[in-house]
Image 1 (cartoon, helix red, strand yellow):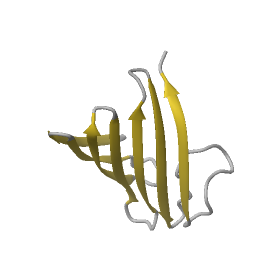
Image 2 (cartoon, helix red, strand yellow; image 1 turned 90 degrees about the vertical axis):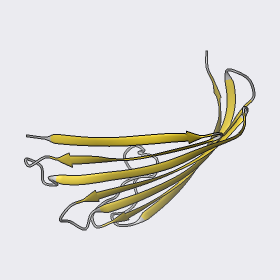
Image 3 (cartoon, one colour; image 1 turned 120 degrees about the vertical axis):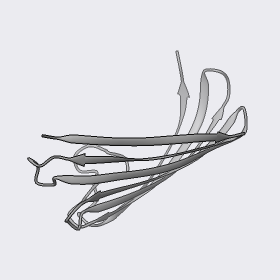
Image 4 (tube, rainbow, N blue to C red; image 1 turned 30 degrees about the vertical axis):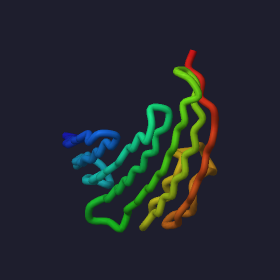
Length: 128
């Protein structure tokens, strides 16, 4: 029977928010029966119009060489209540047979198994 354990916590200190957690997956019917996904992040708001955040994720499949580490850095500047400009950069490092993409993109966008990938996206977001 599949089981999941999710532990998440966060705390805010003025303009800084820290968060972290663990997602443990146990699935004895799977070829990869147990994995841990660790994550930690920080958000800093130097002003009400601007945020900067960074996150770290580590996926570890137990009893195998399959691991992946993802680092991201984002910044958002709010032009108005409904419009913002943003930039996000990321880097993923894969070990073993993992070929996870930095962007979870479509077919053909993943790196070769065991290799790394970097990505950058920028844009304007408007909420209707």
